Each structure stands twice: as structure tokens, then as C-alpha cells.
Length: 510
Image 1 (tube, rainbow, N blue to C red):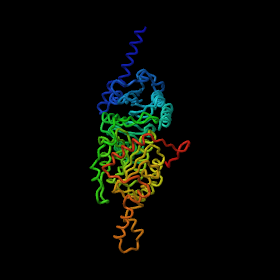
Image 2 (image 1 turned 180 degrees about the horizontal axis):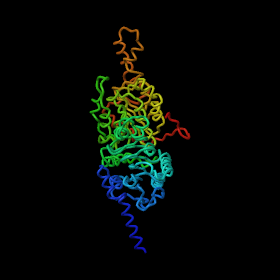
Image 3 (image 1 turned 45 degrees about the vertical axis):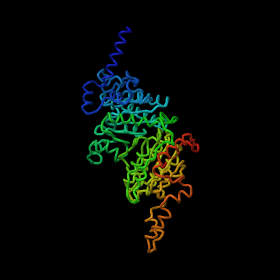
Image 4 (image 1 turned 120 degrees about the vertical axis):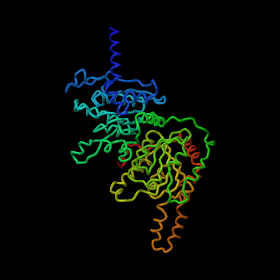
């Protein structure tokens, strides 16, 4: 009897490993996609993945689903835990070869189990999504399964990092689970997300649009902002996801791992930074040059690089310590804050604050983008999100004003008034209510000698001294010393303890 059971177990394991069968696996490969198990092999450290619920089957008996040929071990999703660079992570990988990866009650229960365990032990959750949506044969049971997952997304938010990688279709209600995770990435030409598909849209609005145009990786990474980045293929996406994991802590009670560091006093100057700001303040430069020259090994993991490019956000290290970096981008819209930039920045700041990641902000902002489109779109409400996020954050906050810091945008960008810990200005900084031209036309509107008035205004306000005199910046530093100063401040602030007044939750202007 024992031998018979052993053989049965091994046979079932072999069946489970094949998912929907070799024919469907071949079809998956022809599309340029890896299978659910191959994706796990690429993502996890070799031999580290431990699978749960391999023998689970659905319990639907309607529409012929109770027939043996419609029973697949694992029920279309592979779940378990593994290691990424030696650190634990819980994950699920949907198997498109089994009923198109559609979600059944059993499928959902498997996902909920690993999410519960991740919160219990304090480890990140990664979802590899490749699903046609709800399993229609199960009706409301499938919908209930989605809701159970949504509830856990909410409970895990701010407790453990949650990351979604869309590697195939993700449509209808299924999109709301990734939408509530911390980061969503997509694979170009093979993944798409939308609430209603092209056929429904054509029937209702008479618009003709392809799946790729409607919800492809490029659309969501550059237009809607629903995706934090797009990668060329499955392997690149999974390897980049591994890189991202190195910057993140395990949970909200820990800090990211610190890499080997050197004595702060021995950190070299960066002479390049002395030349990066053009003498003409109307000329643009690339804030990415400033960021990469300042961080360890020029290693900057940019988040949402193709969306709201007038602000740059991402992860880097200073002397081995993980930080979240935010910077205005003068190359795009002069670095003005608009609706999309405000939302992008606010969400990133709140993630870093939730997971104990210090914030380093590089400021070159001439203000909020003017225009009826922005006003009608709610720039007041959306701009307040970034202000709220910075003001609420209790992690170490270091700010460097490289050039312009005008108007309300100066306040918003992690100013001293929002509990900034260390605020610096470069000699090129201009901290004022507005630029010289606009200010002079208001103050000296009846003056004949506008040029002289403009020069006087620049001498008075278009420099870092008025702010420094009032203690609004802690020091005026040479650009070349920026890296060393930030590293020293992060070391000093590593023991910072700050909290906000007790409340059930804040009411950020959504």
C-alpha cells in the first residue's frame, strides 16, 4: 500500500509540473513567454522555492467542470515562498496553460494563504500575473475570491512590500489587486491591463482600439501611470525585479539591508557637480546627471521613468544605505510640478515613509504648471497630495536645492517647514516667491527702467542668502561636497525617532 501511495504521489507531482500540458506549454513559449514555474526559477535563488498546495483542485461541478479532463493539479496558480539574494519572499505565479490562468475559488484561496503567511512572518509578496480573469463557470464564487485577495492587499499595505508583475492578460476586476500593490511592472508586447476590453468599448462608445493601445505596457507606463515600468521580456522583467528587491526592507518594522560602507571622512568629492548647472538659469540640465553622480556606483533604480518625466523618483544608496531619491527634472517642462508629477511623487514618498527608507530630494522647481487644463484637472487637490506626503513623513529627510525653488513649490519639495531634517542650497540656488521677470513686472509695473529693477531683484532674492539668513536652509554647500554631506547626514539621522499624533488614519486629499 505504501509503495502504491508513493507512486501515486510522484505521478501527481509530475502531472502538476506540466500544468496544462506540453502542447499548451509550447504555445506559451511560441508567444515568447515563460511558464509559471519557469518564471519562479528565474526569480528565486536556485533551489530555494518551496511550493504550497500543489495538489489543490477546483470544486466546481457545473458546465462539465467535474469531468476528470477538467481537473488540473494546482488549479492554475503556483504558490509558495523562496529566497531572493538570501531573503525570504512569498509569491504566486499564475499559469496561463490551465484555463487561461482564470481565477477560481480554490485558486484564490491559494493566493490568500501565501499573503496571510507573508504578513505573519513579515516578508514581501510578489505576484506574477498572467490570467484571463474570473473563471466564468464558478460565477459569484470567483468574484468572492477576488474580493478576498483585495481585502488582503489592503491589510498588507504598508506592512509588507507588495509587487505585481503583469506578464500576460489582466482584465476586468482582476486589475484591482495589482492596482493596490506598491509597484506594478509590465512586459512589453505580451501584457495588458484594462477594466473593459476593446470589444465592449466598441459596443458602448463606438471607439476602435487594440488591446495594446488600450492597456499595453507602453500605454500604462507612459500615459496612464498605472504601471511603474515596462521591460522587454519575461527574463529581463524578473531580473530587474530581483534588483529592486535589494533596495527594500522585509517589512515595516525593519530597514533595508546596509551594504559595506566606508568612513564618511574618506568619501571623495565629486568635481563634476560643480559644472552641471548652466550659468544661464533659463537653460536646462539633466537632474539624472546630478543624482547618478551623487549616489553609490551611479546605481539608480528609477521608478516610472516614462511617466510624468518632469519629476524623477527611484532608489539608490549613499555609502551603502538605501534611500528614496526625488528630483525635479529641468529637461521636461522646466521641472514644473503638475498633476501627474504630484501624484507620482506623493505615492513614492509615502511608500518610502511606510518602509523606513530615508528621502533625499534634489530641488529645481519654478512652480506649479499653469493653465486651464491643470486647474480643471484638479491641480490644487493633486498638488496637495505631494505636500501632504512630505509633511506626514517621519523618515530622515534631506533636501538639496540645486537651482530654482519658487513659490508654493518651494514649500512642497521637502522644505525645512515640512520637518526637513537637513536642508541645503548650492550657490546657484534661487529661493523666492517667483522668478525675477514676473516679480519685477508686478512690483515695478510703472517703472521705466525694468532692466535695473530686475537686476536689483536678482541681487536681493535670486540667491540662497535670504533663506540661509532665516535658517530655512542649514548651509550653502559646494556642489562637489554634496555626496559626502548626504552620507554624513544619513549616518547621523540613522537613529532618528519621530511620530505623528495618534489617529485612526490621515485623510490625504485623494
